[in-house]
Image (cartoon, rainbow, N blue to C red; front, side):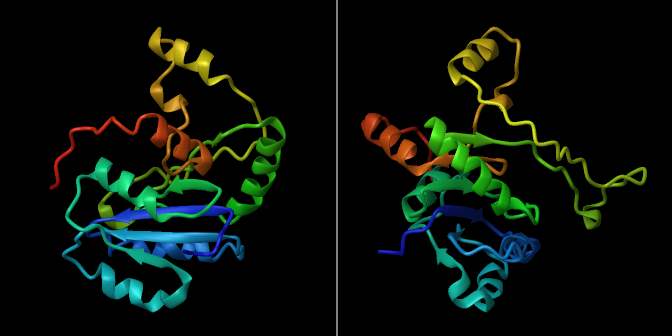
Length: 200
């Protein structure tokens, strides 16, 4: 079994070789050590595996036993991590240089307040080679440190009544972290539930 770490960052990918180096390097450049990067290669037909070879023991590379649809692939990836906190990062996304510094601050609050999910605003950016044009602005980022503890029960009511979007809920993707203990509890509670998702 892998050594215990505080954070697990999952990067699920299928034919993501074009961007995945930038994604991985954005994490490694943070100069923090209490984490693991788990890259799950979902039967890519490009050069993704060749690119990943250069990272040796810096990342963990896994491959599902058969090609999986996205949601099923995400579920499978969750069985491969050992961190106390988990997030999924897109293979064309990145983290900010102060990512772990902020996580350390927020998880300290979360431990004190017994909070199981952390959400923060995304910084939006686009790959220029994808043909996106701009009026001189490339990144939208709100770096204001205004922490709020939110009741997800109240938030769900607001969403169901049309007052807010479901994007306001904690998600296991990019700008959110979920405590692995909570994910394990959910899995045990709903062990008889198997969503109907076929392989691709």
